[in-house]
Image (cartoon, rainbow, N blue to C red; front, side):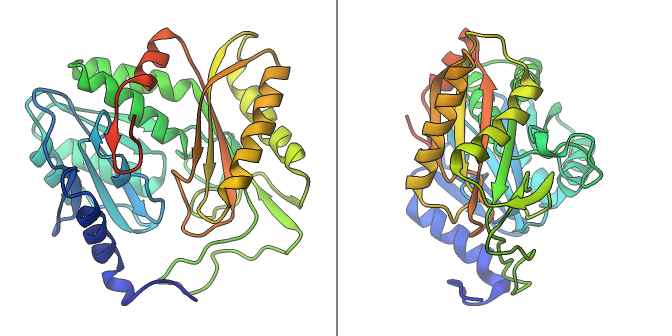
Length: 327
């Protein structure tokens, strides 16, 4: 295993220290329990908190800032954060307007965030993100996984919260964005969790995993490598089959890298996906391309499509300033 690491047990703390040192005007970090928060909190607004296992950077700590999250709770690599982290983060960023937890649908995340919500004395609500169409009716997880669509939910709900919306309004929007979003990914290689020291799964040099999860969990099937257009067709068939958009519908197209795929190839995927969507009579009017929900150094990518209306388009375009997103 070749990684930039001193000691595995101190890797998260050192990485978070580097994040804060790189963005001192934007972020602050607390340890024991660990969370990342906005340096200057949003006044008189619903507090948005998310989190999950590390190894998916910039998700979630990279999305803490104006127009998105107020705090993020990072666990160890691919390990859920604990309820005490979430409670400490809530106490630090709650302005009295309530706390909204945005949670990816994985067993550990869901259980620990639920425990924190039940222990929290202030008003709170939860948006459960389950955009991954690869595991529909699958026995691999507790249901559809939350993957790259989590970023879309955090961005749009963050914009609404910044405008002064109520907790109920933010919760309703989060659920609506989640329902309008579908994702599916493909992996060429595995990744290596530092504590394990070996690849999470074995895959042949000419094989790909269609529908892989962001922790390396299997998806729909193992297949032979194929041209990019065929991969895009496979992913979009599942996504569009789930969303069933009407002709002329405006869309957000998010091409997400898993950490080990060159940006050149991600833009190639965007080109192929855009052609396919337009051929279906759809209008991809907004795009986001890059490594935003990663899986350490895994080679591969996912496609995410969100159905837009005028309100969602305006929320996507609203100003945002985080370590990973800014416009």
